[in-house]
Structure formats: structure tokens, C-alpha cells
Length: 175
Image (tube, rainbow, N blue to C red; front, side):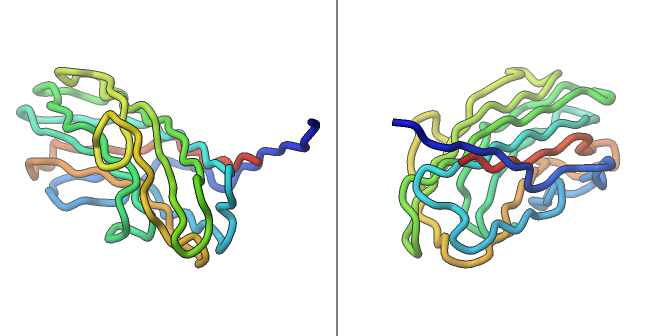
């Protein structure tokens, strides 16, 4: 059967983000994107791509999270813990993932599956899903209210030399 399909860009970066540095607190990498109430209908997906650079001193670890509802919201994607290289200067990181609606409504479910890479890390690339496992799982979320989609990172050690800056960011809605 024929269906009409479409794609739209919901958010993008026009300049580099503010560096996340000298902290061990989970911090938003790029401004939150507000997903409108009831936008996430059955089968609708968001494709998110983000990339930038990181620098380190020592070998701190780095974790990425995707949250539904702001920095204190529900974790819908959790990367593995990356042990970064020592003395890394302006190496690349990249995230590429899809969030798909399994069920909509106030007890809706989302599934996030994607790739994350951190150049210079002991294991430079990994898959990531809900809850940080490598096995996909649906996460319960209220999809009936305007909600912030947040992309965050967290360093294990606070140092002015441990920095992460986003350079490129796109959120696209599919279908």
C-alpha cells in the first residue's frame, strides 16, 4: 500500500556549544529541544546526530545520556562508559541514534538505538540503547505533554582540561 512519508528538521546547531568542563555533574551538551505534545505518534521517529570535540588530562571516563524531560528526566539512552585517552587534544566524538515510538499516549513507550564514538578512548565506538544495555528495550514516557529532549554528558573527573564541545547537531522528525 502506498503511504506518504515526510521528514523535517526540528532543531540544529548554528554555532559551537558551550564547553562542558571542570565538572563531574551531568550537563546538557546542546540546548534542549521541545518535542510538542502528541508529536510522537505510533511509528514516528526522531533521528539525532551530534558531533564535536573533547580534550583530556589523565584518563577520565565519559558517559552520554539521552533524557526525555530535561536533565532530571527519564533516561531513554545511556552510553557505555568510555575511558578516554590521556592528554587528548581536540579529538572527535559522535552520536547517531534513532528514537522510535512504540506506543503513544500518557503511558507511551520509546525505543532508542544508536552508535556513539569517542576517538582516543580505549574502546572508541559502541552501540547504546535504553538503560545502557546493548539489548534494546522500550522506556515508558508521557508523550501527551510538551517535553524537553536532552542530550547530556558526564565526566568522572573535574578538570579545566577535561572538555567536551558540540560542533554539529541535528534533530529530524520522520513520518
